[in-house]
Amino acid sequence: MAKENKGQRLIDEINLLIKYAVPEDEQQDALYLVKKYKQDRPILLLLLEYYSTLPEAREEGVDRVVTLVTKQGVSLFVVITKSDPYLYVVSGENVVFLGVYGCEVDSQILSHFGYGSQTDFLKKCPPVGELEEYKAGKGKKTHACPACGAVEGEHHFLGCAVEICPWCDGQLSNCNCRFEQLGLDEIENEEQLDDFYDLLREKGRIAFEKDQTPLYPGAGK
Image (tube, rainbow, N blue to C red; front, side, top):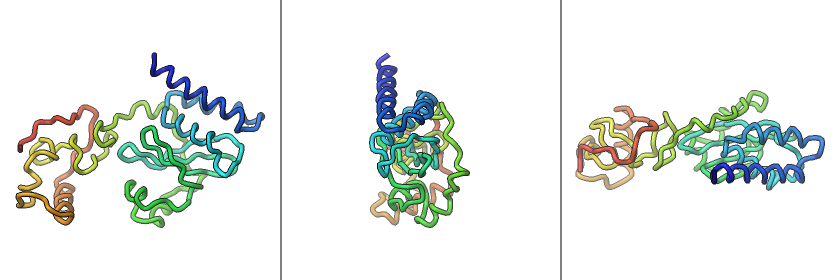
């Protein structure tokens, strides 16, 4: 019940902001979008951030919400209005406005999503008209790693306590396989870590599944 009340309070706050941030003749469409995503907390947090700050001080409602890319529980969303599409990054309860869709994005954010450069990122950004709208209820089915935030089917952050070792099926961060594969007693520098990461990819990393836990029995100590 407390969770339901918390969700309703969030919806009520967004609806109140819409009354002040959106022209009266556009409010019904804006309110409908909130109702459409009432079960998707990341989208509600995104709408709350948008209506709280109103990028470029434009008073207008959101027409569409699009997921551009998601990795390890962090997503790039595009909020589309009549005037402009805006880019946001959403991680858990945190929502950060990045700028107009197509803007320059911080290199660390691009690296997290696997983009080598701003040019690489822009090449993979579809035109606004081709962006597929986020489907209501999609977020409810996503299970995330309790340690690193990877969602089902994604690889863990390297070093995550939940990741399973592909050599011994133990706990990768705790077994001895990394030392055995490298022929070392310990990993002392970034170069050795990179070498192990290459070996791990060649062997085939085990992606996150919802029934994984941080306490898999390891073959090593």
